[in-house]
Image: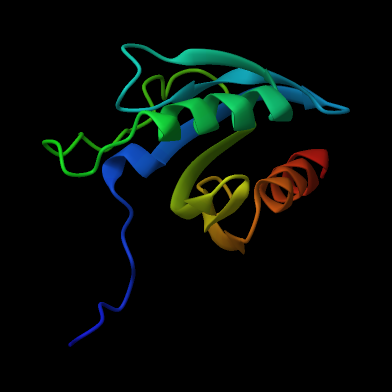
Length: 125
């Protein structure tokens, strides 16, 4: 059995988050996901996690593949754009990658709380 160099998530496990502003945990931004007809407004990190969790509850990777999501409004001035890839999930023990597109950096997280901490640290700078 040959393992791939990188694990790629089922497309239903990948979301784009565009942050327009952030102050003390209060976020103005939106989340894009293949299951959403249009971008969904998010106003906090906890709301982002709950929305991601509800989208993961609907997943079925055996269905026809969902398209990958690209940021919709490149003309909108954002402070950060993140690609969140959730590779494994059991309850709120998520493992995956956070790709900060503005900073061209990739981070690994091992839980939903670690994902929140990573995003908060990046946005607080």
